[in-house]
Image 1 (spheres, rainbow, N blue to C red):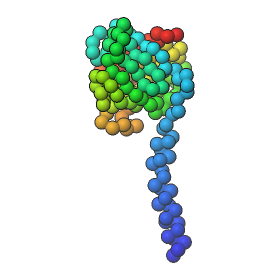
Image 2: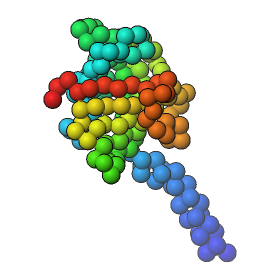
Image 3: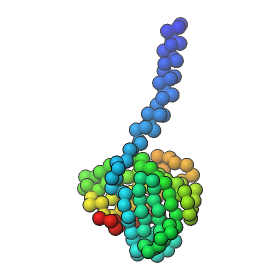
Length: 156
């Protein structure tokens, strides 16, 4: 009887650890020189939904409505959930973040991002979420999507 209780207790403990293992597997630790870091622009963006300049660092983004602006429109903090390279050499990311200052403060989002092989073009589609959920990432980067963006590296 004691042996059965011991086995049952061990099984319950092991089963309770499964969710922690699943979360840890998805966690990506960024490099100090991650390809996403830098200054990105698209001066063809002309409305308040499309920023023209984005400065991305390990701390997050500063986003500007116009390339010439010196005050950010909003700032966010984000984490890379996962990263991979496709057969063509493009770099893909799943990112989640929260706007921490400025317009849209408090908004949570999840993004599927594609960097060109040369790391000079950043296309992404994001979705607004209530809480982060690995199942809610966009499934493709499609220019027809409402929350599609394209930026070009300005600092290489």
